[in-house]
Length: 204
Ligand SMILES: [Fe+2]
Image (cartoon, rainbow, N blue to C red; front, side, top):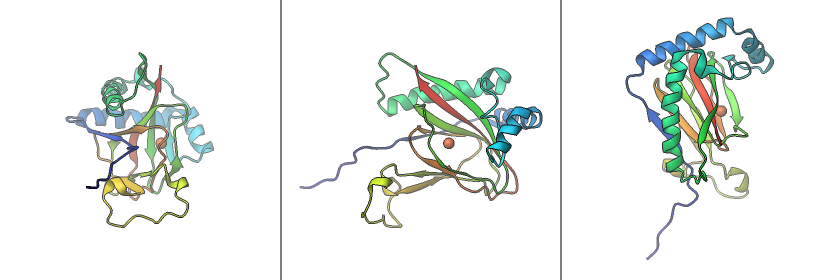
């Protein structure tokens, strides 16, 4: 008898929240309003070549700036607890706490090249506005730098065996992963901006 074992599994946690129409409308309105008024954020986005607007470099207190972000934090906190269980984190009596929450308005043609989120445990994104053709999120196998002379995978390999995975966002969907997992926002091919809210959790 022989068998193959799945070891060192990488979890990506996906939630599709129901009845998020009003929440998404509020997030979109708040995001567009901040994008108009937040001069520090506009400057940060320009200086860092962000294709659109992000509040990453300006606001650190989004959950108290508008009720929609307070509501979103509540949804995310519950998912972070679930993810910690799924990932079998031993938090040693501590908790995962939302460290930062920021708006992304990704213009048509915009993308965000491969990156990780340092100084965090869990990271992720909630999607509020996803026009047709909007950018997917691409994850890559964290073992790639070790695969020196290894063959590539079959083009029809099952999802868990692939080196690159593209997950298409939908309005009301959240994706959450361990912060060391390298990911990339591929080019937004839609005619409209894609509006999302990203986050980091730390271990306290
Ligand atoms: Fe990211």
